[in-house]
Length: 162
Image (cartoon, rainbow, N blue to C red; front, side, top):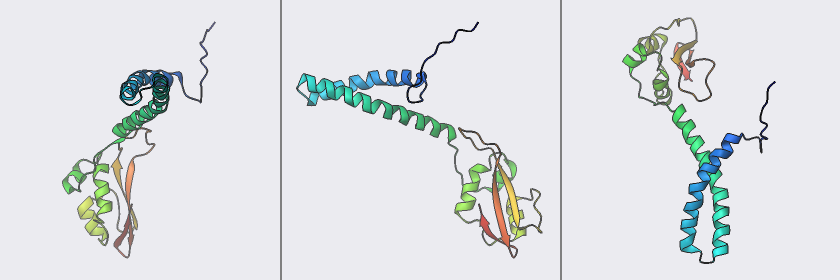
């Protein structure tokens, strides 16, 4: 026989979020009370303003914290292209790929020039679409496949890199 505790979800938010909001709300309440004590002289008005400010600001603080944590977990540095790193550290190529795209490093280069710069990686001169795998960049939501840079050729010249 299983006994489970049923806690209804308000606004489709789990109970843990309410605990966090409560914990954030306590210092927020005291901050507003301290701040409004300097500006609002009428006691009843100050109490109402403190509660309203606490109720409005606490969820904003919570959302800011969540966004900050997600940003930290998903961050990875973008580095200037370095051929030696590209060829030796294949799992972290994603750090170099942004520079390749933004600086148009490959635009106008031939198949052979791209091969000399980025290596072979199984691409052949007969194909007008080359792919270089970049590794698995950090991601909060997780990726199903590694990232890749795609190079398109027309008349043996690079016309697009994405």
